[in-house]
Image (cartoon, rainbow, N blue to C red; front, side, top):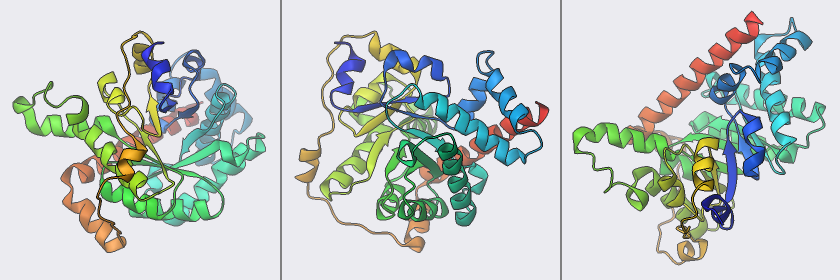
Length: 315
């Protein structure tokens, strides 16, 4: 059994890509996308026709609608391959607008339903801002399941759990990137690997908190830089992994040990915590890494969304 198959014994493996032709060989349960991944895909010859067809079918529609239709087109292609759910992202420019995020999410779900996709096979991704989490709370109350993305801190995870969201995606690699950059020449790669990786530690803390307090929200580690980070989180509810890193795991037959365990988490002595809006904003502000990476992540997704819109308009 290779490492990918061994990992699947303890964790649900999710494909992190817009390149759906790469997905089938690794047989993931779910898949995640975002505007950056879709932008990368449509610039490849194999996927350019999807963009052209979307523009041709809906020419004259608002570019925002074209964007959503393209994202849903990719989502439907992915759902034809995987047995589980696909995550589709609300425009990052709405990250600080609860009402607009809810409306955009509802449109995405309506577009999926028009293609015959049941709402339970779709997760709507929203950024882990206070406004995004509030949008997710409202959507969950309406039966639309959500995936909280751009999550870098414990306070974001606790607020998401309070909102009873379906799933959170704490970002491992981007936390690692920040700490490595801050340390500069003092960074010791070997010493900070595996369970000592700050991104891995962040996910572990969230996982242990959720399991200890019986929180139903799923934890899906995301944004990996290497297979060591993935293996250090074996046992997490889900892990979303790029095709490149899935290929590395599939090429190795080294043993995979469970690193996270719900039973062990329940036995820990952990304090109960709760954040209202003021406390959330204060704690997030106090976390320089989370504040930096959240802002940077939103800016990056916005930039790629604009590039994708430009391609749609040019088409």
